[in-house]
Length: 142
Ligand SMILES: CC(C)(COP(=O)(O)OP(=O)(O)OC[C@H]1O[C@@H](n2cnc3c(N)ncnc32)[C@H](O)[C@@H]1OP(=O)(O)O)[C@@H](O)C(=O)NCCC(=O)NCCS
Image (cartoon, rainbow, N blue to C red; front, side, top):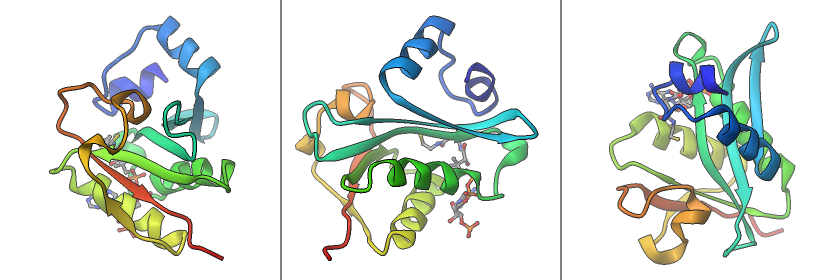
């Protein structure tokens, strides 16, 4: 995890923080030849338990644009088929917005922007003063 955080310009967390994340949350890893090349951190909402929150997705630069980001998000969605999906994305992060839209299309749904106060920062995995905008992808009704 630390290597992906360093290589993907994420905040580098201590080993004990990462271990605690693995214990308490869902962490999906992408690998090429047993080398970890991407991660997705997710959690069932503490305050919105109907949602699985995708809190972080990152792929190391040399492994990007080969489908790992989408595969990580889909693995998260597939791990909780009865849950809708939620997250928060910076307004100018075009790659992440396009990735969210592609995940939604793959689930035959759409990304819906929701008001900032819809979810708590804890569930979204963002700081209180961060500019991330929350969104949901609801499962199509059957
Ligand atoms: C965003 C990120 C995870 C995408 O990972 P990836 O493995 O390259 O993504 P994929 O190859 O699965 O791409 C799936 C779709 O995402 C979109 N996408 C990915 N990178 C993109 C880019 N640079 N610009 C525009 N759209 C992009 C495209 O719609 C793409 O589908 P396409 O290949 O049919 O065009 C990666 O760029 C990254 O780690 N960025 C830094 C961390 C970050 O910003 N994370 C998101 C917020 S937590």
